[in-house]
Image 1 (cartoon, rainbow, N blue to C red):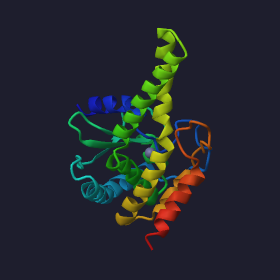
Image 2 (image 1 turned 180 degrees about the horizontal axis):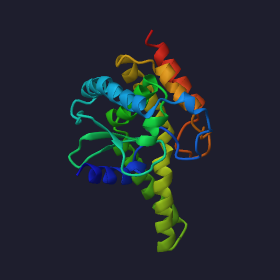
Image 3 (image 1 turned 120 degrees about the vertical axis):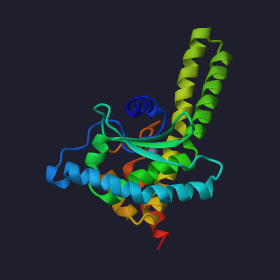
Image 4 (image 1 turned 60 degrees about the vertical axis):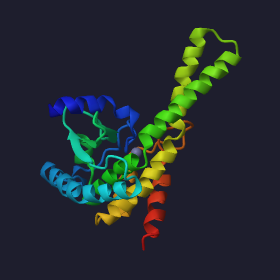
Length: 233
Ligand SMILES: [Zn+2]
């Protein structure tokens, strides 16, 4: 039952965000940097216990009409790259899913707290519905532009696909930075150091500032965390 639900969630993953860009793989590093499997599992359980109530408090304060009863879980169904995403189940309950590879790769509890805070922030700020609205608007605009150009039905359909893609990605960097800022606050109030947590970005592949890239450059994300955390002191 549980794994079936997770399999469905996994197929929805692309609609949501990812902490880590899907490719390329992170640079090799000494395995001594990483926690043991037991430590990684303990880190995950401990951080969930502390971050979840804080995330729910932020959610209820900012968006009391939303479902704020977070379910935080690990996708163990198949081999997935290090990744985390947020989605909602059919009942509207917000779900945060980390892949096993991410749980294993996160080096300490500060990093784990930051990842969870970031994903919770996507839900609190309504990024999935906002992203979908943006995608629809992009598709409509793409179709209109193709019609003006006198394109045939096939060309219009193609333009709609492209339009949807452009619309969906246009807000993505903004959403990621917004989630980094709110995730910083959630991690901090759960008792963790978000600046240490954001060190995770120093170890993953930097997507750079590529046109239409879905993730902001890593240094931009770290800067957002530092600025937000500085405001807490
Ligand atoms: Zn994200």
